[in-house]
Length: 225
Image (cartoon, rainbow, N blue to C red; front, side, top):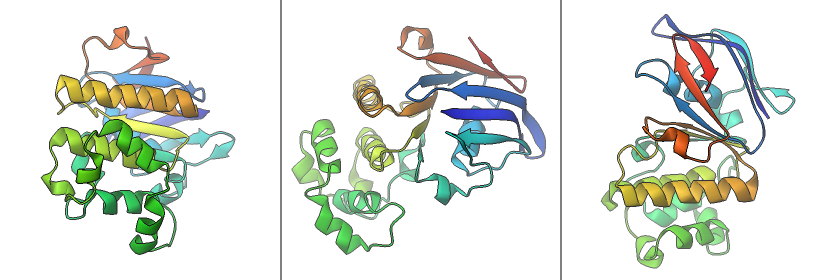
């Protein structure tokens, strides 16, 4: 369960979320909508620990995580950005990116991660999303298409089996086919692992999706519609 308690958030000294509260049950799929500039992305980065609230608290389960760093929260919360370059390292190969992903939060070296990779469940996910996965392993990530790189970023974001997955317009730059592949994977992953998913979206047909609830962020408040 994720709980926002009287949360207020400032951006550039301007109050964009004002005394908002919300409760998200485990395994829920929440769509976050609203006009540009209302604080949707900042709400996600605040939950992830990349931005500190000016007031209120954030609880995950029975634990108040408000004062935890982003690194501490990364054990249970993953963030998939709109820009896949923020979730991947372009100068490394696909397998090196995956090896680092399975070492998340550990002090083990990249070399150890590569040794563990062949038998790690992350490889099953790679095979699920990429038909040419064997060729891709040795390819530098900077040479991938935008869609391929975002799918890889999704694999990395889910590798640690987080309790909460935050997604900031993850399909904005993808083709319809790539967007469907990504969202089908996320929905399957959510159902299989009972992961709570919050996604910022500007999709006009948001009500047609199988969301548990739709939040509208506007004028500093979070409304369930």
